[in-house]
Image (tube, rainbow, N blue to C red; front, side):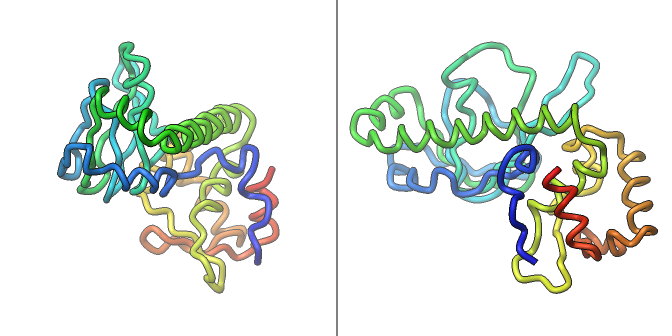
Length: 223
């Protein structure tokens, strides 16, 4: 079934970023190559980063140490724009969800890129706009949508192309999924169990789940 309508509005609330800045690969020779292990916490503010391989996670943490995952960024994306261009104290941080290869650009590098490769600046503005849209939709979804609707919005962004029966690969643990959706993991487990029993989802197998009633599922994802 075609997943029409899940790439607009609050349906984008939990979209992951992929290859939004692939054109920046043409200037990697200007940057400094970095290899990070899984779990590495990325320093903020002094450099702008391009993720060549791997996946990083943006997490917000309050004074009590409670954390909320905001999104995941995959290879082919620039990240760290906000602290680079607006160097204020941050409550969020990037960490490596996998081993990563990144390229760091200093302020001087970015100035050179803006001068000699203006199309890359336009590309960066476009990707920053998409991130703002995703974050805005996520905030709206956390306020307006129930846990089941949020779960369907997340899974709809992880459908395995061509899968029959329709299957989603979460790509993260259920605990990480709960943090991203803004719910306690027990509440998420309860919803998933209820929907398995009702026949909307099949049993979870590792990080994959079969969607047994696609029409109802996409209606919830588009809500």
